Length: 120
Image 1 (spheres, rainbow, N blue to C red):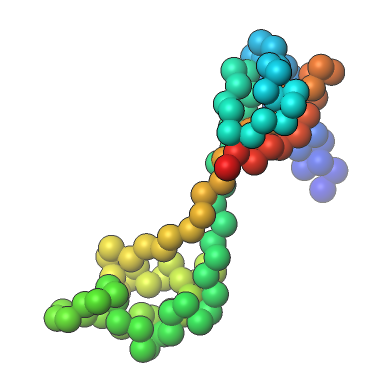
Image 2 (cartoon, one colour; image 1 turned 180 degrees about the vertical axis):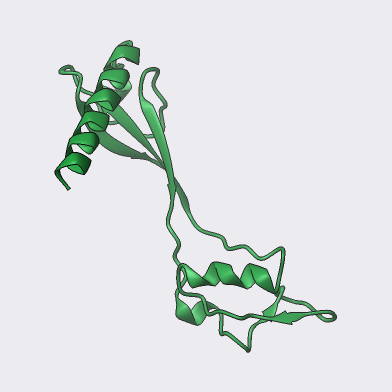
């Protein structure tokens, strides 16, 4: 376990150093917390958050794809994560929609990661 912690710490230090090395200057927009502005030298991290739940799809009942009238399949898994993605076995085009977020990591003057700022 200790070796994993050391590896993780080393990765964080290397990442922080890489961010610091590529940073030009943090502009006035970042200093004032102006979200929505991508600044040179900052790191952008994208993430998605699945918002469905078990009731979104009912296994054995929900017809796939939605609105299908012929050659349809029935869901084999409910809407809970991660099993919801097993529905691609009966519907090759199965997919979900989920919000996507982009966070901007701003480096601090000390070279360590400053903060995550969500871009809306």
